[in-house]
Length: 441
Image (cartoon, rainbow, N blue to C red; front, side, top):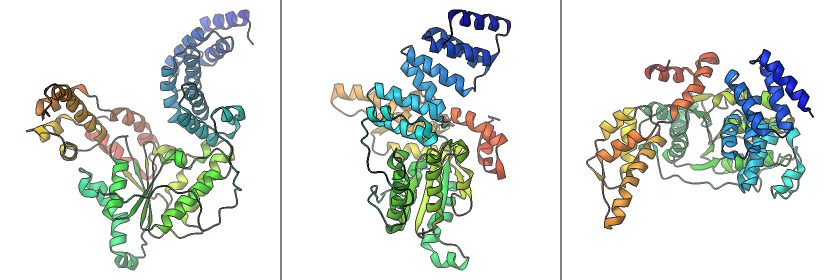
């Protein structure tokens, strides 16, 4: 514990060298330990002005925010860190969520924390989350035909007809997944088997999940959507068993599209895993993809991620997710089609969708949905007063466009550095091409 004289000495040293980040970090953490959270917050803020990418400073600021009662501000900082798979940020986030009564989300963040760093395991905190310990699953006991863990397998009613635009993306998926199933003999002639994996990546809200569901509908296959929460279990061996059982379920239901959302969280780089817990899940995932003990014929694995650069490189080897497809924000033609699809069940009055599409450059599909929601809300009050539906006009839609700020530019700001400096084999070339067309480079 630092004394007041120690703190005064650190402040005096900083007057001589105000931009000395290690020294200011030392002072900020000392203030935290002394319970002087307001002063600590100020020091962390100052240090981040000099070193804005320092994860330790951001985590310290989040701690100071939390202690100062600024939980919303703390969660904003922690969201950025958890997107980078920061284990300590996940743990702090779990503690905050618990105090807010959000136990389900707290358990999820705690599980992610110990997946990344098993040393963060806290038995007392686990008990406070209300998780009763199940029977531990032996790590080596996975060599069985099937298991009890299953997710709902759906038969999507949508197909590529319901996907606005994305023609190039749909063509790539058809070549990799759909044509091999529809023309098996032709592909067999060329030594190609149906199956394999495709990784869809790009900014959020651009239709990756919808596209995966439409792919299953296009070939009338079963569709199993898998999230990290579905698989992860805080007990050793259970997560691996869950993953194995899901692949077994898909094999029995073939043809089946097995879709992993936010796959970067499940397949984060093994270099980021400090202990074995996360590594064993990744290794299990790779074994299942390879079909080491069970054939994957007819199992079509799609995955989506907003941050492909965090995915372990082993996932991108041939036979795994060997095809990466960039799902960009929709072009003008696609935006017009998306607007038409979203408006088909809504009373509208002579909308000029082509004009609106031109006004919504760089809007994602989610942004377009938000525009329509805003326009509809502008008419709801009037409709409730009259008791009759009031059609949404073209001006309502244009006003909603003006009021909405597109969300994709933030993603491209982060993706730019990876596309420029970690562009192995040109895998992020589509990102650079898109940015050039928008004159963002």
